[in-house]
Image (cartoon, rainbow, N blue to C red; front, side, top):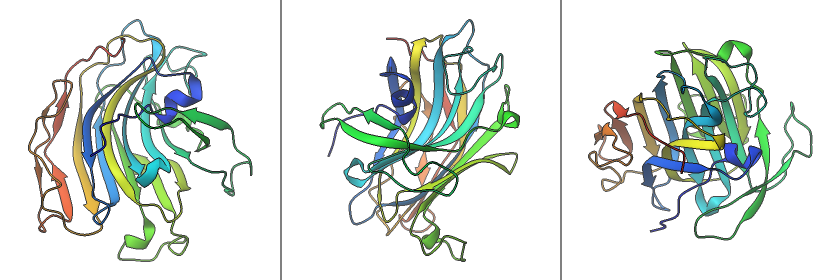
Length: 263
């Protein structure tokens, strides 16, 4: 089993990450890969006196590190993070770092080249695909942000791009779609993450927050995929269960305490 931890795509956009702390790390088998993941972040307060880019996210890493798909919620001062004029609010957006150039209808044919670094494997060069955040997607304490990352061909009904074999990343606030990216044709999900990150600057402590309705769907049942608690960074809850013998995995609410992400 691989033991490396990711440095997120968000950090790659800005500068090498100051700190990336994975709370949940789940590896899927090659023959029972991740087809879909969804999670709802319940926001805490914004960081106090924050001079860095504090990010909370859930993500899927594809097999062979071909793509890294994230739903990101971040807070940073003016001029540092991906969003501007945040103040005491959070910004939310879908984000994808992929292993080759792609063409998307709403983006340049040649998108910016980034470098992502992992603890063990060699660095890889990859471009960014993104949907600019809607100003209305800026939230405050107690608001909920839901990220759904799925392969359309696996759904029980057709979607517009179901024949493309693309992954859809959709980020919702109160059931309203606010950010979306479709990438990573034909790839299989290998690792699911929930993480806290200081992507740049001098970050204040990431406030306590929680994740609800976390669900992972595998390509085939794997009864050994789940675990009961024991997550990192002092997190509690997050017990996993399966209603269908190991194909679908559901979490109880995961509570994450205030965490110092500045190393």
